[in-house]
Image (cartoon, rainbow over all chains, first blue to last red; front, side):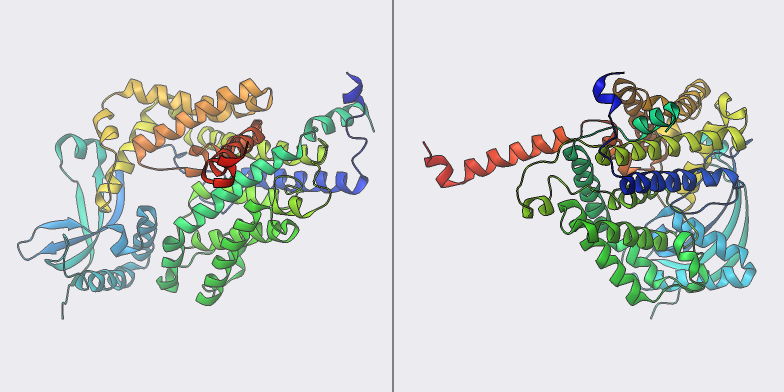
Length: 163
Length: 313
């Protein structure tokens, strides 16, 4: 050990030392606290980072999503900003919560989305006449191979009423 | 104090120049200000969210219902001003803690609607920690105001926050690796869990009317690639503590982490701006060289633009 290292922290006052230890201990304890959480629990800014940690056994996806239909019956997926905001994961959270609210919850969101679409005078959804909130179960591998979707259940359907 | 405790303290609180901690403050504060400004539309979008979607997390859990819109706007404005003051080192004893608390509050609010954005965890923790330290003793408006303007000597008070920030970074990645082992199990090593996760995530984006990575779609058939990526992910995450051993080890690990985040961006269209900017890893290195380089460039630029400078002998 060199001389300088030997007297390393002598100039650190007792109060500074206490602050340094206290802040370090609290921050590290807080960071490690999520280790005691289960995979379903998460928070902010402390996290156990459970996303993508689940033992997914297949590429089958169960998802809730919104579909707009035009007069010819052509379907278009409703983008996140018309469901929640520009964040795709936020739209997912809003749709999932709506589905957990049963038919009433799904219909409530369906009407809100239809109202936002009705307010659009141009864009890909300007010709939409109806919105559906759908629960789908699809194999991602099959979809990206063939374009085929799996089973869909309509949770709510409502008209786009333009004024 | 026992020799072990003394050795632990020397490691946890090494001497460091004030300019190094100041440089990290400038980089993190500057990033926070720019990030918050760019996220204003996102944060304020929650003002029009129906209260039934409110699922408070963290410090916002104290609220039973969404906080009033006026409070959100005020705290957002406060966070913007405080992070700017934080970056400039202006009245840092005040702006430091205010930046940490207001940023924590406003980002917790934005994460309280059923979706937690893990891309923001590190930034908040960094601002909270730095805000409690003497990070404005050098290269700051506070330091310029003080007389005499001599730079403070290297000291442990500038070293322990940097070491703590390194521990925060390492712990974050290590925890993510532990989560994959705990909940993902051995399947994670096989690559199929990662491949199926990316495939399902891409399909979800299609169904939600968003864009997904065409590169991921093209690569889904290559299981060997996902096996390699899964192993590399776990090596990078669980190998994080290696960055604490030596600066060269830290450099190698940081390059691997940035490559990992680039992979996530390319395959999943998910961007982690704080680590990808490199600023999250500044505490591992001599960050004062970056600010010194920027200051020298700025001086040169000013000298070239100033007529007095050009006429000087």
